[in-house]
Length: 352
Ligand SMILES: *Cc1c(COP(=O)(O)O)cnc(C)c1O
Figure 1 (cartoon, rainbow, N blue to C red):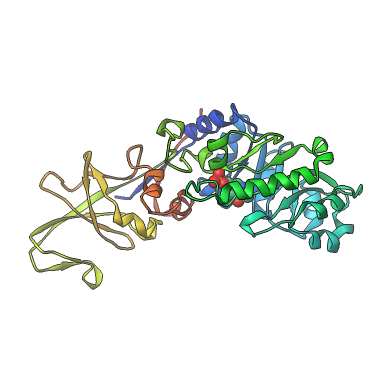
Figure 2: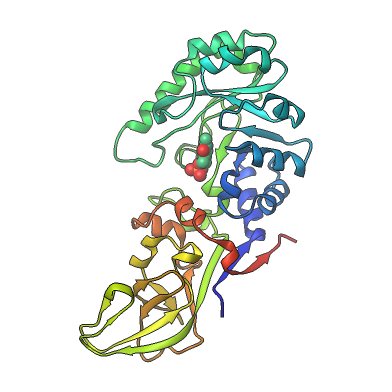
């Protein structure tokens, strides 16, 4: 038997449509679309009405362009392959004023967007005044401006309010140019869900919410995000461990009492995030603790009702990525990006 990963493209399309029908969305499809698969995700999102896509690397940007010649393809990271960008009509995000100064000549005729670095301190211009210089450069085709909030899911501090205020100041500095821009965007899933589309913005930049996961828990009903991935495995053996004996490598589990362990055919080699072992699995709708995670196996403590051949749910509508995130297992992207899809039996549910 083999563990199974279901990719539900039908739900993915419905999920994206539920957002795109409320607000113009630039879909974030970095890292093979959060590991869902770039082409399948593109098709679902396009079907949902989304016409702008963004990723961090040129290879994926070129693949996006190969799927369709008309959509907006935005590269989020810096890149100096200017001829390739032009040939593929890819919009480049300018990472700094220095980058602009250095490559001014090569940038002519290329479509670009300006990035404000903000409190994330990753990439971007440090203030609006340098942006004015670039916006005034007639040789450049600036079609947008953006920033990224690092604290949109932080409800405990005022850091989010701080970065929003910084950004407003930048927008105010460049306000004369805003009417000429097609893309003015800052908000990820969390920022959009907590505040709706900000004034004077044209789009959100959606990630997790499009993939069926709530970016935070508090006050968000689970019906706003239907999970698009399901992971299950199988009980392949039952072992009874007498009190005082151990199981797993380096005695990972020590039986204090006689213990019935189910051996499950999934492990970190399939890309299960290590923290997943701290939370239960479901077998026949009952919850059981994972005692040991190995490369290809889990040892789960079970009772007499569990037998060889039973299905073991790892992620499902009841075992949601966002529940694990809320309980400290790591973000959706950490859980999702880790999957090694090659190691699974894959089931694909298409949108039509
Ligand atoms: C990943 C990413 C997003 C999407 O964020 P979510 O929290 O998944 O909605 C948006 N913008 C940028 C620049 C990103 O890197």
